[in-house]
Image (cartoon, rainbow, N blue to C red):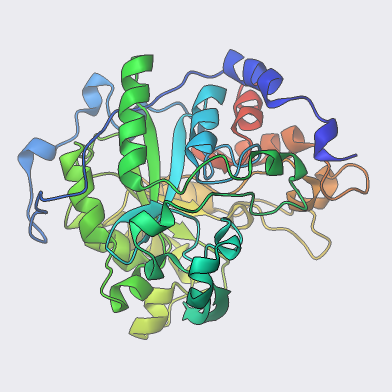
Length: 390
C-alpha cells in the first residue's frame, strides 16, 4: 500500500480540527536597520505576562509542532507547507534558518539546496556546484551562502524525499524558497485573519559554521524578532538550535523562549567539537546537564529515542527518566519527529511490507504522549492532533 491509498489531507484536517484549537501570532517587518541590544542587557519591559494567559505555558499540552510545516503533504519549508499546517490545526509552525550570500535569512532545512530545489536545472548556476565540509561532513551540491536572495528567488522548491512521498511531487515547482521576513509577514496576515496568534518554532542551522564565514545567524535573527515584536519572554515564538552556544548567544540578545535540541546520546554538538568540550548529549540529559541547560533555556527538543529508546530490532524499550528529570528543572520537552510512514515508525507499529505505507501512527503517538512530553514535532500535524484527543 502506498501513501496515495490513504485518506486525503482534507479529510484528516476535519478530523484533526475536531479536537484541537489553533494558537498563533502576528509579526511583520523588513530585515533592516533596527539594532540588537548589547549582550547581557536586561529589559524589564520584556518580562513575561503569563498570568494573563500569554507565553508558551498557555499553549495546549501536548503542543503539536508542524515539522517544516505540513511536510508529510507538501514540499517542506514552503509557504504552502506552512499554510496547510496552520489550516490542519497545528499549534506551532517550524522554520529552519540558513543565510544567503548577502545576509538574508531563508527557510531551508539545510544550506545544501540540491535536493529541495530545482537548482540543478538552472544552467546559469552550474558553475556554483561545489564540495564543502559542513560540521565535519562532506557535501557536494549547491549552497545558500553562495547565492543572493534575489538569485534564490529564481529557484522553485521541490519534495525532498520523492521516493517516500510520491504525492508531494505534484506540488514541485509551486513555491519559492521563503525568506524568514516573508514568513513573519505571512504569520501577521494569518494572525489578523484568524484573530489569534500564529506561533513559530525557529531553528538556527549550523551556526558555528556560518559564523566562520562571517554570516552569523543570531544577530540578524534578533533584529527581526525585535522589529516584529517577538523578542519578549511571552512572545509567540520558540528559538531552537542543536548548538547550545547559539541559544546562549540568543539569550543575550532577546528574551524569546529558547529550546536546546538534542540528537543521539553518543553525539556531540558541533560547537562543543570546535571548542574542545568533551561532553556528549548523554552528559546533557543527566540532571546536572539539564540544570545547566535550564540556566539559559526554557526547554529541550530531544530525539524521540532519548525519551523511549529502540532496541536492535527497532522496537521500543522502556522510557528513560528524561521527561521526569527535565520537568524537575522546569524545562518543557518538544521531542522530534513523528511521521506516519512505516519506515519512520518503531517496528511494532509498522503495518505491511511497504516502507512508504502508513503504519499505526496513532499507536506510536499514544505511547510517546503517555510519557508526559509537552509537545511533539510532526510531519503529519493532523495525525498528531487527533492522537492528542484520544
